[in-house]
Length: 213
Image (cartoon, rainbow, N blue to C red; front, side, top):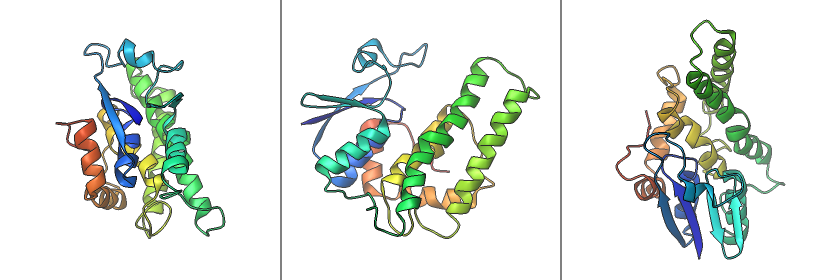
């Protein structure tokens, strides 16, 4: 049995969601953040040498990194569902957005979070650079969703599961006004209507309304 070690309000929501979408049996073990530091508790950090979320255990396998976990679960238990084969026309788009989530979008928002922790003020060149990077990233996302329902095209895929966290839950840590991004807001409504997403969020973070607007 796969165990999803879910740290509250974290990227591990992606793993719970994928399991719900694919109907993969799993045991959910929830961990609460430290009330003072808002970091993972010691027992969570002990799961993997990196001490970060998400983590799954599957027999002798202990795996971290949400992208790696999603690929592992799809390949081993999902029959490749929610992925895109390399010979399909939309494979490059799927690949790009799957990796854009943690390769570009998350770092741009995490940079702002760190800058806030350091107390950097408006007008600081680092703040200006981070804001410009974030704006470029969100504009690119908005443009992509102008003519397609999902990031890989007409069908929902794991690229959407990867991309959603920085558009939603990450905004619990770094505020982002989506007023200027109507395509993103419409997309979030589509995702929010998915039963598997609703189940995943209720199981993983009960009582926390998803940031879908």
